[in-house]
Length: 353
Image 1 (tube, rainbow, N blue to C red):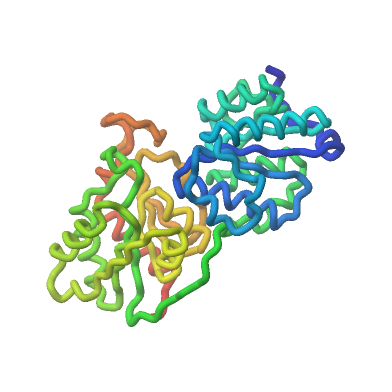
Image 2 (tube, rainbow, N blue to C red):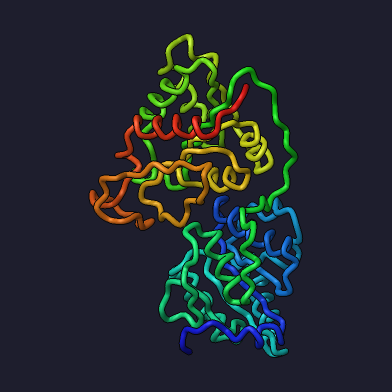
């Protein structure tokens, strides 16, 4: 492949440029990529931005242009249509840049390598894989800010980084309810619940619930969608002292719209490193996130975020799905550390009921 250099900005301005992102079907991945596409729309940029995905169920929730923008590559007709469209753009002199959502993704690299062989991609862009055509150094830690900085560098437009807080690329009305106490949300769910390194024990959630509800000004809300939701809620309630139980609420959700409504009704959030993290960050809800084996680039940056890590892991977080004592694990995070992070968050972001 060609050497890893940033394309000449004059060449970029002289032709039509298309950015093609990969996106998985998890909600958190969609929120990040949807935020980027929404940001580009708000910036009124000249290039077009597209996303390919493996049958994501969340596309209809995007608040903006969706037609001809999201491509389900699990549908062969859609995939061949995308290839034909990109080939036409390329043959007309356009520049098509393939950008993996996750830096260093071998799957995305192979996908773009195939598109390049078919004449549907001009350059593969990555700030991790050394054999990509264009390599831009990571200018930020959070994956969303990294991609935004990457695009600003490619197009030599640093002003795109001004006010780069993540826009909410989803549509939902604010339906703030009136409650007597301050509302603390619990989101213990993850798509990787079968891997203990990515989950926090239910018993620890119960202990944290008791510590939080010891403050009579606080209410607690378990929200989300999971097959174990009712069982989890019932066990939390049973573990609480009887006088605390009336201040524990359950808010099951069945759609992104309900998910957003539940988040907007919170004063604080305690969550794993998962979809609720990205949505709450976009809404600027003060939150505590527990981060174990998940890569740090999935954790947003901001004064409204407190990160609690497993400090006993000898290796850095890597998203690797293996049971290894040297890997960081959520299982080893202590309840007291999470509670102390929550208390610090409350001091920095006092709320009135």
